[in-house]
Structure formats: C-alpha cells, structure tokens
Length: 137
Image (cartoon, rainbow, N blue to C red; front, side, top):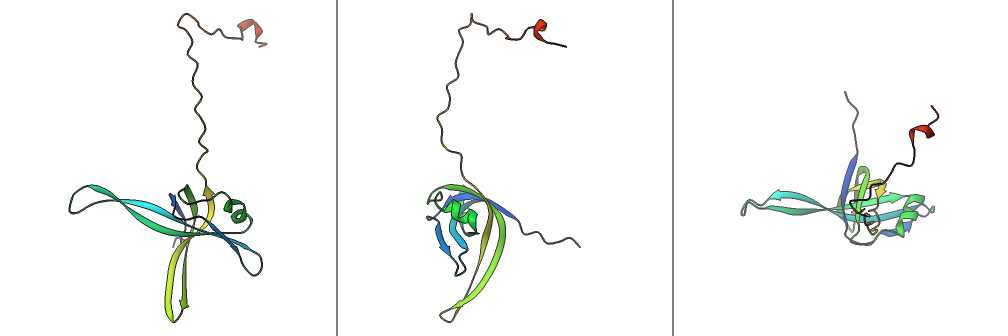
C-alpha cells in the first residue's frame, strides 16, 4: 500500500499583511492568508469566472522571521508546504480549519527595467574575435 502524500503548491495574492508572533518558548510564527482563484463556468451565463479560495498559511522559525519584513497585502506569492487540520473549542463552540504549513515561499521577481537591445546598422556585421589560428588544438 502506498504511503500518504501531504504536499501542496499554491500561487495567489496575499489578502492581508503578514503577522509575526512568538510562542512562549521564543519560536517565531508567521501567519498570512492567500486568495487563490479557481476558474469555473457560471451555470446561468455560461461564462468562465474566477472564484476565490481563501487559504490560511503559517510558517515557523528563523525563515518566518526573515520573511516577515517582505510580505504585504496584495503581493503575489507561491507557497509550497503541507496541509494541517486543527480543531479547538472557543467560548463553548467547536471550531476547525485546514491551513497550509509553508515550507517554501517564493517571492515575485523584482520589477527591473528591461534592457533595450542595441540594433546594429545593416551594413555593420560584428566580426568574431577568435580566429582559427588563435585556437591551440
């Protein structure tokens, strides 16, 4: 019988600024939330529409501390990790949730100006800088 696999990769936009807190023992916990769209056809109009899924994510330890200063609402992220189900009672009401325990977080590449390619005049043809006689073998 195959082993269970608990692996998830999602890409979406942050719905709120990341929140960094610490446990009593001093371990950092970073909490954030992603909106990940699911495309479905609207049964009434026949048009494709985006339906958001809101996913809670947590990350632990030094990496959580390092990332906390970079994550902000609206940012697009790709998160890889595992799913964890939690159940608790608050004010006599049973609560539960499934969250992503993030192990890898990929930030978007920085927006850098694109280098403009240099166009050579048609009459100019770059010459190779290495000639056959320069090659030793």
